[in-house]
Image (tube, rainbow, N blue to C red; front, top):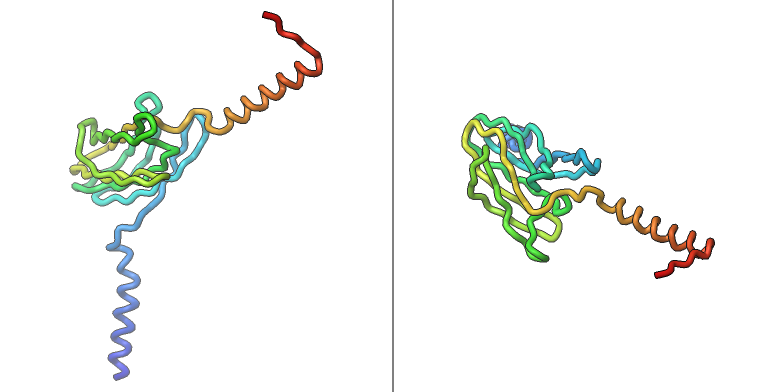
Length: 167
């Protein structure tokens, strides 16, 4: 009876140590916008490759994911809407996803705060580009604060100096 307990305990300890190797655990990557200095965290999981870097392309309103692919695989990436989004008016539009420059099929799920894209890629893939309609705002909330301070300053200075505008 005692040997049976040891065997069960050994199997449990071994499975706890090995299970994370086989599970596809989500990882995080901090994406920093060179223009504004803002940083956003994207969650991702990848099979068949390793994620090298993620960059923002303001000109194409896209996120470019650079990978090192050893075999066919899948990338699932969850991006905050504050980082990239695809909108038509107030409604959601569809992303375009390119694998090494070629249009490809993908699946997507959405929440109020994030959009998650899952895309398959073949061996030797180097880049996956997700194109939306907007990426990180260039100035963010700081521009609003500067605008408010400027307007208040103009009003205060005008009131103190009693400037009058004539038309």
